[in-house]
Every structure is written in C-alpha cells, then in structure tokens.
Image 1 (spheres, helix red, strand yellow):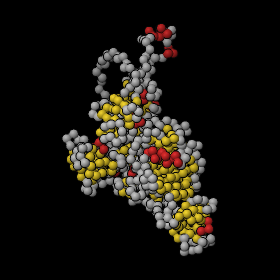
Image 2 (cartoon, helix red, strand yellow):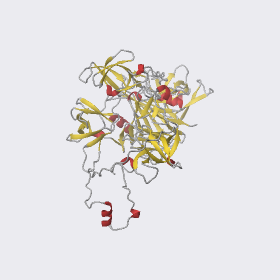
Image 3 (cartoon, one colour):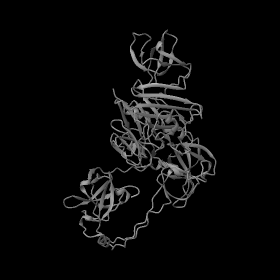
Image 4 (cartoon, one colour):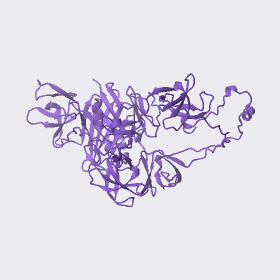
Length: 631
C-alpha cells in the first residue's frame, strides 16, 4: 500500500490460497470474479495530515505576519482548497467547515486517495446471538507483534472481526474446552471475540484512575507552550492583559456559553481574565508538589581575571605549594577564573565548573582577560568537553555546548526509563541525581494529563503524570511506541547514534531513544523553510558526519539583558558551526536545561533555565538524556 505493509495499513488477502487453484488465467478471472479492466491509479487527494506538534497555526493570509485565526492539531486531517504561488502555503479547510485559512505547507503531509471500492452486497442477517457469558476476573496482555486477529469463533476458520495491538490488555469471557482459544473483551468494551491463547500472557487487572474530588474540578493546567494569553473578554478581539505559562495551574471562575473560553485566575490571584479553553486541561489538585529548589548555578565570575592552561595537564592542589595534596586536574586550553592570583607569588586559586576550588602554578597559566571572556572551554571528563559562547548579534545569546566523543568506551547513555508512555515528571537535575549520572539535558515533548490521573497514586515519589508525545525507549524497553514524523535520536549499546523517523529501526537495534521536535540540519545543510518562530530557549542534539562526535546544545532565552534565545534557523546555523552533520531541535522553552555532577556529587546547572517566567527555575519534564562516566 502507499503507507506501509501489514495490519496497521489495512492490507487484506481476501483468503485466496493460490496453492489450491489449478487453471489458466481466464479460469482464474472467472473463478474469483476478477475484471479484466485494470484498476486505475489513485487520484490525487486534497486531504492533508498535520505533522506539527502540538499544533499548527492557521492564518488569514499566506505569510507569518498575517493574523492567526485558529490552530490545527497533530494528526488532524484537513482539506486543501488552494495554495500560494510558491506552494509554501496551503489554503486549508477543516472537515467540519469550522475553520478556513492558510498554513505552512512544510507541516502538512498529503494523503493518498484510492477509487471507492465496489460495495459488497448486504450480508444475510445473523440470528440473534446468545447472551454474552459473565466476564471472568482474568486479564491478559497481547504478546503478538504487531497485532493479533480477533475472530467470530474459536478457530482460524472463523471470520476475522478485528485486531488487537501488542501490549493491549483484554478480559477473558470464556474459553473453549482445551483453552487453546479464549473469548475476550477489550478493556473499553469496543471489541469482543475469540483469539489464540498462545498469544496472550496473564496480567493484573487495569487500575482505573480515581475521579477528581468535587472541590478540585475548577482547577486547570496550561498546555500552551510557552505561554497562554489572558484577555479582557472571551474572544481574540479583546486586548491581552497578561500571560499564564505552560504547566501553570489556574482556577476557572466562569465560562462563555459554548465553553470555548474560560474566565481564569492564577494561583496568587494577581491576574484574572479570559483564555481559550482548548489550551487548558483539568487538574486534580490546586496544590501540586512544589518545584524543588534549583541546584547551584555556575557563577559567572564576570569580575574575575581569567586564565588558559598552557600545558597538557595541570595539577590542582589543596594549597599553594608543590607538596600539597592534588585534588584535581586541568587540561590544555581549559579556561578558568582566578579567585585569587595575587596573595601567593607564583600561584593562582581557581574554580572549575563542577565547583572544585584549588591552587595551580601560575607559570603554566596564560592570562587571557580581566573579565569573563566571550568563549569558555573546559574538559569536564575524558571525552566530554564544555564550551560556552556569548553572542551579541543578532541579539544577546548565551549558548552552552557539550562535545562528546562517542569512541570513549567509558561513556554510558541513559534515557529516562518508564514502563509506559505515562511517566512522572522530574527536573533535569532530579534525573541526574536519581540515576547518579554525570551529564544530562532535557528530552522530548510531553503533554499534561487531566484530573482523572491521580498524581499521588501514579507518582508517589513526586512529580506529575504526563504522557510522552513521541517515540521513546530506555535500555531496550520501548515505553512510547508512537510513530510520528518527529526525528528520533537512537543511541545503541555501543554508543552508535542514528536519527530516524516513524519508528524505523536505526540499524543496530533499539536501545536508548528520545524524540525531538524537528530536524534543523540534514546532510550537513540547514533545513529550508524552518518555521519562523520567535527567539526562545532551545535544546538541540547534533551528530558529526563520521558519527564520532555527539553535540548537546542548550541556548538560554527570555532573559532580557542576558540572553534572549534563538530561532530554529539560528539553532541550525549554530550546530553547523560546531561541525554537526545531522541536527535535531528538542523540547525547548522552559524545559531547556543542561546539568552536570559537581565535585561534591550533587547536580550543578550550567545554563540559566527559566520556567513560569522565573530565571534559574527548572521545569519538571517527561524524559531526559544523560551520560554516566564509568571509572
């Protein structure tokens, strides 16, 4: 078929077994009622599927300055009714006619169309079925891959009436005499039939979420990223009076007649106004776990004198003499601030990024600046080098880069583990501390769940239950099987790295996998027609052409006077400047964070994250990507 092979794409065999047919081609046509008329090629379709996550803007005209008239959501199907001269924009219409406008064609995938099949004659009505037996208390999980056929009776000779996907949970209703076939019912009751028992494994009964308490029903969580406008009245024509941020809890105090706009109030009651209800999801409690205090942020040391190491290896000593204990080392070209370079002749007291403080011989250091330089480099671990760069054009931008040598066999990667695509949120620092890692960044997109998912029950150790938006795996366990257009970064057992889409095998088996937002560099070139999004904090991952060097990049943003963020095209250009051949933009905004393990074993934040408009505060996110440096 146009879109793939197998059950998910609707392939049918019509139960024709050619091994039991004898005759020439004319006999074959007559036997199976096949026409000599060739099947016409599928006619071009005007239907398109939205590939942007989580949503795609619809505008009045085909340009980014035109007024936004609405949004389309990931995987929504719309009809094309026109296009711009350069075909960069499509004039689209929702299937129900509720929205018409222009959207960027890069995020719309054309669907194939086939001629309508000849309708089959109405089947003879079946007799009234016997009452369904009372279900048992036995539950099973489907082990067949990718799917298991459900039949009308206990045997392969019965009609195929539906299918179950791998890991779906079903309830036993009855069994045949030797229990080789079980009659089952789907958890939601939408399908009942018989399946082969050999493809079922016993499991526990599903736990149904506890409904929210009555007093919690008016609390909602903001799902718009990075923020949601609060307006004077219920409609886009009203002036914006403030913002609430992604993940923030707000209280609903009123609604318009059709429920498309809510009057909301933020938790500290400093802002009251109207917001679109499509970006608000019910929340179970107005008092979630408090955001943990941020770990120590690396000091800027703007007012210090900075030095560069001018030898292959330089010892860091506990005191300013050669007989003192060695507490650490610096590598050639490392740049460090001087906490004290005048009190002891021939010695400089320095501080590393991990917080280690000690003394180095001044003879082996070169003074480079009386203030913090625009570029900083420091080898954190064998095979892991940190670089910071401050740019002043086209706006203030501070970026943090980790260059990772994949040939170093002491590096071990980890994506946040989970048993399902519902996962408990952690800050990037909490992830690093919990799994005793040395380096970590935030991962892919996630979505908040409504109040029927009880945080206290699902996340007893803290955090909130969220759903991973795209494909994800940790140490061979695939816990989010969504096959989307978003790029997936695969890291193998031997630190092989490949980027795929639609859940394709990377070529070395699935081990660790985390999804990004979109590709920004492909085959060493900037991707064309990247969405013209406003500058924002960004997280990105890149791979060199020879597959040896992996790059982690975090760009700070939304902090006037310090760093205002980057556009997607700028992220791609910056990755290219570090030798990246394949580059992926990850979840960004308030999620962007880069942390390392300090010399004291506790996490330290390299960048300046910003969540809910608060600089220095890390957001709890769904998954992360980290590195353990083995001894």
